Image (cartoon, rainbow, N blue to C red; front, side):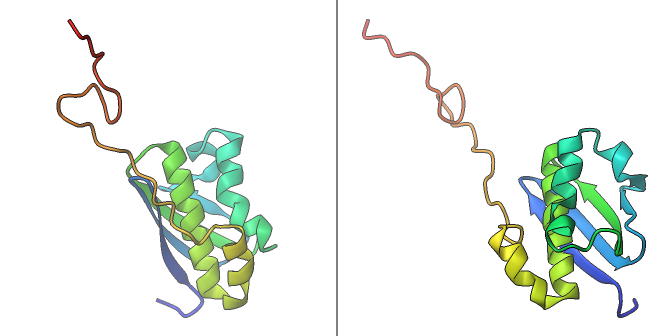
Length: 130
């Protein structure tokens, strides 16, 4: 592995994204597909590119990403987290900008489990006195 290649892992809910970053032309590949075809919604593409636009590094790096688990939205969040961590590994002076935007913090919110004797995680069956 060369010195100018950076690796980071991003997580969101049950989604995990492994991100490899190298100097290039701004090509982002997720699971061997371009970002335009992998993430259909424009909002998800904006989420993924958020760390790049904040640090003014658009078009400077190529990203090879393997995302697994969760849904598309969770994977987009995991990719964003991974890209932010890779950028921090590249240049530690970017940490302040990324940290202030909250991109380096792992979103710890998870789905709450269903409990026995109940309809769901918090929903109960209707109580009747008689």
